[in-house]
Length: 106
Image (cartoon, rainbow, N blue to C red; front, side, top):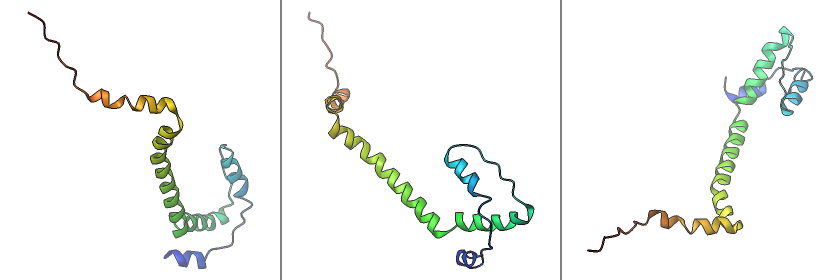
């Protein structure tokens, strides 16, 4: 079905079944749901509509963009904030200089 059709036709579901599990997951604990068989299909439809929605895609895109900005900003922030980093960063060009060969005197 189209994403908007999912939102219009979502079945009613008792979210009190899922809430304790979500709280456990947030606290980094495992969770096993005992869902009554009659609620399983409805829960599957609801979760699928949430996970495959346009809003979820947009939120994930924003999170990826923010993490990329963080990765780009970290070296710049280190260069500005930490004097030791600046000191060692000035040594980087010396890594690429060729050493002069020493000629023996005759």
